[in-house]
Image 1 (cartoon, one colour):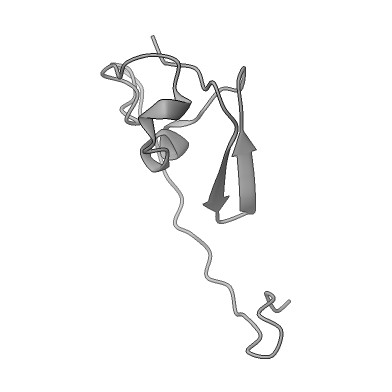
Image 2 (image 1 turned 135 degrees about the horizontal axis):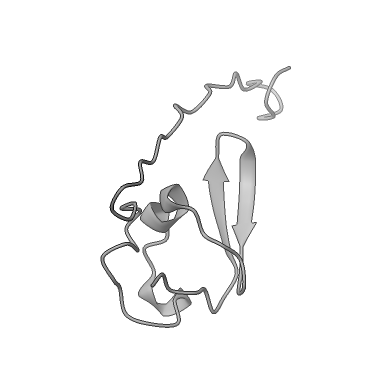
Length: 77
């Protein structure tokens, strides 16, 4: 059984900043990035590190590189 978050965490993904909090389903890629044990409501189990349950496969997409303006620091279109 996967653990639940007891605090809101913010992660950087290829789509921007993503927030997960109590009650949210945390996907495997996010489990790997959440390294603070204090935000989880229980001890680790075998599926918490993003390992899919037996018979399921997880496919991760490659991040999309973005150009950043040297003047503003904002992503360029």
